[in-house]
Image (cartoon, rainbow, N blue to C red; front, side):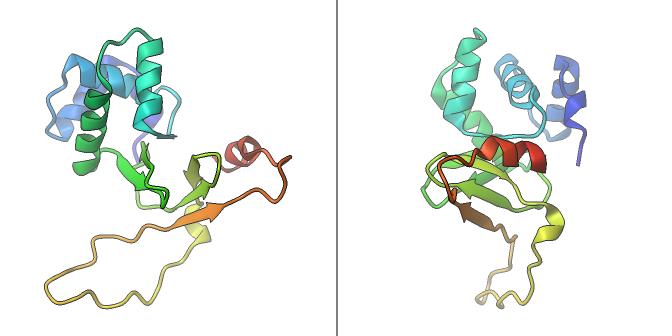
Length: 155
């Protein structure tokens, strides 16, 4: 996994985009600066769009969606779709699994050694397994439980 903390300068982001064969437009560089400024994280397109507006970056929500989906399609970031249909984008593009906190729309990483996947079924004729992603759905046992404490302890 790459060091996300080194991706704070426009030059570093431009280099990373080029390494994935993507032209580093001003909007892409600005979005990636926002995306990576807090380190590895999981973010919905709407959240990143609001951050862009707050920071005075002028672009449409469609541009944010298109950019994030394109970066996910080339493996620069990961797309995490939870069973509510909501999509999050993950700056950690390594193979790993996720927790999803129901009712709070929060996603965070499962520690890599906490899940072992074995005995996958044979794929149907003409197909191969591209990957396995597990999303463990959580709900607080009590309203007093704050997922922020869990998040900070696991990151």
